[in-house]
Structures are given as structure tokens and as C-alpha cells.
Length: 253
Ligand code: NDP
Ligand code: 8X3
Image (cartoon, rainbow, N blue to C red; front, side, top):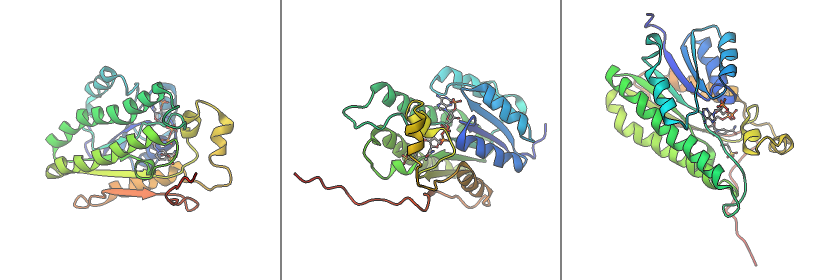
């Protein structure tokens, strides 16, 4: 077993940020555990990457599937050094009183419950080994409210506070935790998913903008991980230059 190479476990590696992080980490020679529902995508990615990969087809909302995935990691992938909690999604942009309950439920189960569950499954091994780095994909939506952001933004606020509280518990064990909060980012399936496959609506989100790209997020993650062990990057918030917070809204009658 080669113990020199870092082992990174990346959720949501079948697309967007997760795939870009996998490519970046492969260039560093890390061994990769790639997890998402679309196993064929993960296998195609693994075939392209010049590093050892273990692909897992798993729906993170299925608690038993997630537990099995971690319990059945091959021995040479089991000592996870870096956990990238990236799998997540927004569904819908309707105002709170019109949003689909099923969409809210899926966002909470994916962005909150599954992130907490996987962290709970991986953290004990990190504590036992006295090393590890957990990277959490939040969003500017967790800090800045916008119409239709309702439960999606709330799930990302959960991710941000969980990141802080993980630090509070895990820093004494030499484990680092980093929260990454990107703004508008294209080049992933995020908006396609948000608008339930409506390609025109998804494209309109980026019209006339130069959004962040998945490679920009991968660069931040890579930088945070590469810092010396005594340095913990707590949080990185990044937006494309074309995006900025707006004023508070005032509705007049
Ligand atoms: P993508 O839709 O391109 O990627 C999302 C990934 O999550 C896919 O690999 C998908 O895989 C996986 N995923 C979703 N649901 C599940 C599930 N139930 N079980 C397992 N895997 C799942 O989006 P992005 O790359 O843009 O988003 C990545 C993360 O970054 C998300 O957490 C998102 O909220 C966050 N983010 C995105 C921003 C953006 O503007 N794009 C900005 C800020 C944050 P599969 O479908 O194969 O299961
Ligand atoms: C994705 C960014 O602004 O679409 O998390 O919510 S935003």
C-alpha cells in the first residue's frame, strides 16, 4: 500500500466543480474516491485521470448507501486525507409560498443531511489518524438573501455554520476545515438542475456575464489544501467580477 499519496474523497465528482477538483487533485498525484449517482460519468472521468481512482455510484440521500460506500472502501483508499463535501443542488427559484415542497425536501436532504452524515462517517478515521482536511462547498446564497433563494440559501447557511462548528470540534485533532462560498458560476449543470432541465432558462442565468468557472473553484480548493499544516483557511468567498451584493429592497405602495 502506498501511503505517500494523499487520498481525497470527492462527492459530486460527475460534473462541474467536483469533476474540476478531481482533475486538479489528479494533477497533484492524489488518489481519488469519486462519488455521485451517475457511475458511468465517474468511470469515464476516472479513465481520463492519470491517477488511481475508486468510483462509487451512490445517492447521498440514501443513508444506508452512503454508510456502505464508506464501510466498503478498498483498504488502499480507506484512510481519507481530504473530504470534499461538494455534492449539492438548488431546485427552483419560485417564491417561498409557491415553491415545490419536494424540491425543498431534496435540497435539505442533499445539501444538509447528507453532508452531515458523510462528515460523521469520515471524521472518526481522521481523528484516529490525527490528520485530515474537510472542504465544504457552501455558496454566497448562504449569506446574501435573494428572491427565490429561500431554502437553497438556508441549506448553504447550514453548510457554513457546520463548517465553523466542525473547526470548533476538530482543530484539537489536527484536522482542518475550509468553507468555500462561490457566487455565480457557469460551466456546470447547476442551473440545468435548478430549472429541471429547461436549457433556455438555465442559459439565461449567464447571459451577458463572465461567471466563475469550475476551474476557479478547484484552484481555491487546491490552494487551501496546499497550505502548511499549521495554516487553516477558514473560509473563501469568491464572486465573478461582474457580480456584487445589491442594496436592501424596499417595497413601496
Ligand atoms: P453540478 O450540478 O454540475 O454538480 C452537482 C454534483 O452533485 C453532480 O456531480 C451530481 O452528481 C451531485 N449530486 C447531486 N445530487 C446528488 C445525490 N443525491 N447523490 C449523489 N450526488 C449528487 O453543480 P456544481 O458543480 O455547480 O455544484 C457543486 C456544488 O457547488 C453544489 O453544492 C452547489 O450548491 C455549489 N455551488 C454552485 C454554484 C454555481 O453557481 N454553480 C455556486 C455556489 C455553490 P449526479 O447527478 O451524478 O448524482
Ligand atoms: C449558487 C450561487 O447565486 O445561484 O450557489 O445561489 S446562486
